Image 1: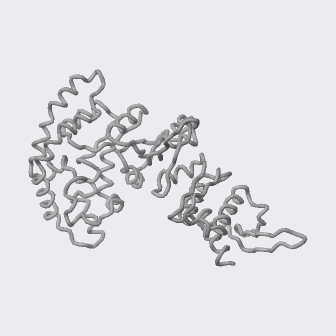
Image 2 (image 1 turned 45 degrees about the vertical axis):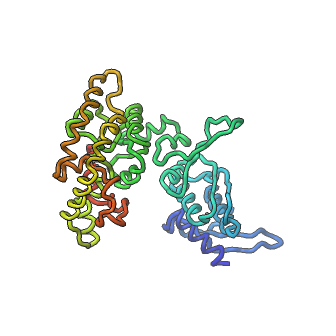
Length: 374
């Protein structure tokens, strides 16, 4: 019985409530029911032993949920499990710990857990984890057929499920809020930059619109922009931050970042050979890239306001100013506008490297701090 029920329960309680003896719960005694009294579960918290009846509502909720998963686990293969509002009377940290433990410990890969919730801890977990998602059912007419899709990860709007936009604004007061492209936000947030929070946006256009309309900042890939254009854009749109190279991957796989990575792994790395490999790729695909430049720049969101008519005309006519950068064999020149996301992917030195590890390098951190003016 201990191995089947009590140990799994106690292990989960340590994960959810933490391992500090003064605050965690552990089941230490079980008394079977008799004719005169019901069964008793006795828990230890700090130096005290507490009957289940005297626990807080939130603590009882956690124990009931865990026991249900433990005793019914044989039925959960190939199943959809529905639980309504399983976050009652728990603080945000405990909410997140609870849902993380249940999803990752008790739900088989062949099954799904669905729960209705407006809990911040649940939203935070679903917004960060690859094993969870948020589906917003609000303001739909379900008398009509509806197609519901998961909310994008790292999306600030999902927190409105729990709190109002005004409250979010107050929570973020004093913090630098930056919208960034695609999944890059996860890596940026992992840097734990002081008083800085990154939120998801679908693409460059959405970063630009969200930052501008919400009076926040936006961080975008450089793509095909000259140094002079970047200066002009940042002067016109002070909220706009731009990476120093073509895209996020250019930072991850920059030779300076890989030098640091391989040094920490105590593995050899030939910087010059790596640069030669990238240069060869650039020269091989240069003409193909040139054909894409004008069309790519056409889709940029800049200068589309009425007062910038002259600017956008000039911007569209100056696509050829990218050519000297791309045609140069100077690494720090062509690398600014050469996509490491699309090219040079087969170079041996970048094989089997994990982006999350590369994004932990000091060099990478310094580039992001500089890009967002920290």
